[in-house]
Amino acid sequence: MQLGELEKLVLNHLWDVGSADAKQVFDHFKKSRGGSLNTIQSTLDRLHKKGILKREKQGHAYQYRAGMEKEAFLGQLIRNVTQDFSDDHDHLLAAFVSLSADLDEAHLDRLEALIRDSREQKKDN
View 1: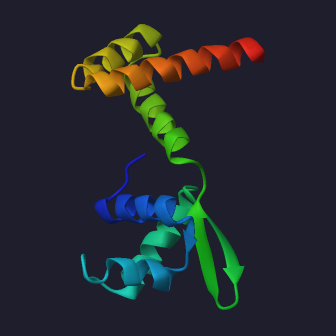
View 2: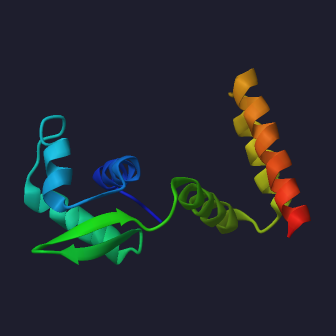
């Protein structure tokens, strides 16, 4: 799934604030990015049509929110990209090892803790 620059910015903003209408999103970006309210409305609508955002009508405007947590979304993106090249999980693991070369000790410790937590959850299920 391809996302444009503005789509990524809007999605990150919604993860930060929880939910917002088009005017609130526009107000957030108007000083730093410029653009028009119409552009923001179109971007929100595109993200909704892609299934990335949920929306609910409140008064005359839609309230938008991310359709899934950031971690789950990033995991889905990684799965989609890696499946385009191979279904072999060893390639995925090798890619994570390659990425981890840039991590500092604190992040490596956090990664180990997340792996331990994931294993514990699997045992409990």
